[in-house]
Amino acid sequence: MRVTWTAEEPARDGIGERVWRLTFLLDPEDATTGVCTDGQRMELRTNSCHVRLPPADPAAPYARRGEPYVHPDLLAVAAWTVAAPWTRRRVTFDRPISPELAEAILDGWGIEAGPVGERPRTGSRLAISYSGGADSVAVAAILPDAPLVHFRRISHPRVPNRWTHYRADVLARLAARTERELSVVRSDLEFLLAYPRPGYPEHHAVAAGALLLADELDLGGIAMGYELGSRWLGGDRYLHRYTPDNPMWAPEGMWGRVFAAAGLPVVLPVGGVSEAVTMRVALESELRDLVRWCLRGSGDGPCGTCGKCLYKELIQAAVERRPLATTLTAKSAVARKWQEPPPYGGQEMIEYGCARVPGIESTPFARAAELLGATEESTRWLDHCYPPAIEEIPEPWRERVAAYMEGVGLMTPDECARVENWGIG
Ligand SMILES: [Zn+2]
Image (cartoon, rainbow, N blue to C red; front, side):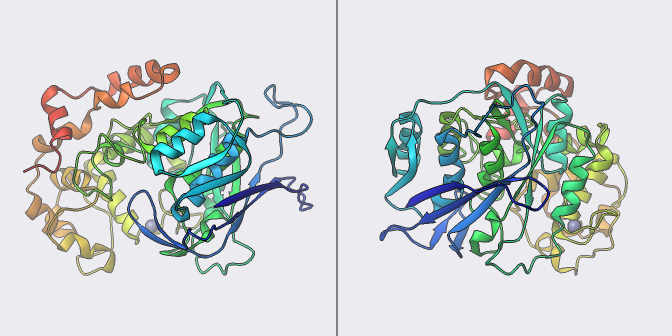
């Protein structure tokens, strides 16, 4: 795999974005089919994309003078988030990277990376990768001073966009209304995928913009909204299995090491709490009116009819102790999986919701509730924080998150065992 980044002249579109173009050329042993770290099979459609950074703020004390500078390790990691699935033996970047980064790629993937010959970088501030969903809003509420970086999907010049109902513009507008320090990064990198659909080739590609901005914003960490289920309970991939060694989100996992080598460790402030806690934190925050987990809704609100809306409505109804507000039924296509027996992706939250939502027996979750037999008592651990998740947070930010989580309540040893025995028996 040969990777090239080119900084283009500022676009003459009046926005003044700084455009970085990424092109990657496959070596003979590489392939246009691959697997995301989460196990999803994927096919590559095309080999170039753009990342468009917002205009530099000349008044910002951290803005560098003169030529925009991006450390080669940052460019390399950003490229790796889209090129890794297709690379088989070696990756050649267009400028030398640090030996630390080359080693992290070799250890994680068995891929030789080079050329080597740059000193590693560091930074000091923590930014939040902000989508506007409940989990990232919770992170923003816990870290009220941290700058936000929002990834906004735009169309690719050579790929037809059959997903115009995805309203990335709405999410970006909501992010702007947070009145926080915000950088909106626009990119067409999701259209590199031909299959299964436009999306991040690796989940970490959402951080491409934060990586390219890390030097000028003096970033030393990137906070993401991955919660207990994604970090420790296997998320969707390992379905119902305790995953201390999670390759995507463990600090010592392959991706954790690569980001740390580039001086931008991934930080999971809500990695120890469930989506019930992030939902509660988000809804109690001053950002509550700006929470939006659905990409399909218009300016007026979420669509209310997609699978994600149904899942999140179950959690919100449980947190608010009210009946489910949905027009969907057990016969709806998006509710089909809840008519099948478990295990389910995100099962801990299905258990939590089924145990708490009044009248669950007349909702699309009736069958799942019956099969799971969860109670408030059996799901109480999901209201508390798993302490090992706090220990994973890099030292500069650990104390602050720990103080917040003590307010939430830490899991007892018995509750920790619920995490560590998840999926057993
Ligand atoms: Zn929806």
